[in-house]
Length: 373
Length: 194
Image (cartoon, rainbow over all chains, first blue to last red; front, side, top):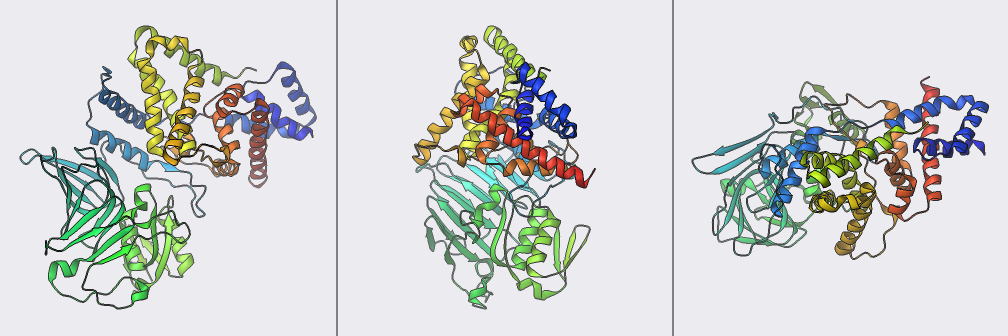
């Protein structure tokens, strides 16, 4: 069918593969079918379109490459400013995460348009160094995440609204960091130098492993999820009590008990109803029902916001941190509405609409505040 | 009418190759990196589905280019050479990590450079562009990959055939299929929005 032959010829022409004979054949077909001209013009335009390169991102990528070469003993004398590892990662992570991906696979994703952002003057990530005590602090505000490389080469993904403090040079015997908020750790194995994470309520000792720690000050619980390796968790209030996690387990601790003594607190899981929990619980990690390769506790490191069978007031907190908004429940009954979902490229409106569609609540947005009614 | 895009880029690569080989020109090396690294990284990601590994291996390949700079001129087609090496390295890594010996083009996850748009540089994507992107993503994975290598990476049919171990005829057919589908989308769109 000459219709299909057109595309074959056109492709060969656009790729520079067409012979003179083929070009003539193409023109001949077009003479008989001039209605195709328009499509052909469009396609030619599409084919020749070049996506402009993100030069800032490429600069950072090149710098990281040069650093890597240096670590192999190959030195390039470029006149570039010397950035240390963290700054390179920060520049790259800002670029990478503020780029948006045409989310074709997600059913709800369309195109996300970001407000203007400035690469090196991002107000959302601060990185302060204290000369006196030689510690470094990296902080993220809501709506931003970042990645840090620690002095020993361990990787830390820092979620929104979080803070990590660590020494520029780790001690001889121990590697220590202080966390408030949520972070995912990929710790370099070193049996002689245990890695210890301090949060407000617990200390986590690891030898070399991958795990997620969720310890927001304004959360009721502290959660440590183990992906790989092994961790030992001890309560700050009672150092003799230790919990050892195996991969795919998580430890959930109620902050109120840990900080204020015995208090009855409601369980967050629908099935247990109003059960008073005094003791810390070891649970299995949560995977999405729709996609059981996605681990809810750590999906944020891959830019996926997910929750499985969680009450709206918990989901609201996740949404607040992810999108940097405030969510207020005018109608309290929605607070205990259970929901599941995963968002990868959706903007706030799309996410809210998706949830509204599946659960039935109503909402309005006033500036940076969402009101559920 | 000759295509200008392909020959320009290939000529540029050859010039840079010469500068690097003859004069150890580091600015040329950086330019070469800017041209080739993203394509290589995306290609490796397509096979390995890991951004971290893709970046590592692509970096290793570019490092090699510098290490072997004196003998660079011996390589006639540098872009092809690197893509073939990329495939080789990616498969080796795949085997190492997953113990998989066989690799199927039907399982690749194609990643396009145009997937990532810097908001500072492009204001927004039009609906037609979105529809086209969606159509491309809906093509069979192997077809998508061939389309990417031809359109984005500007590889010749023979080169693509060599990299993917396919026949030129297959490349011909697959690209025709891709373009026909895109044309259909454009046609339908234009009917709604003349």
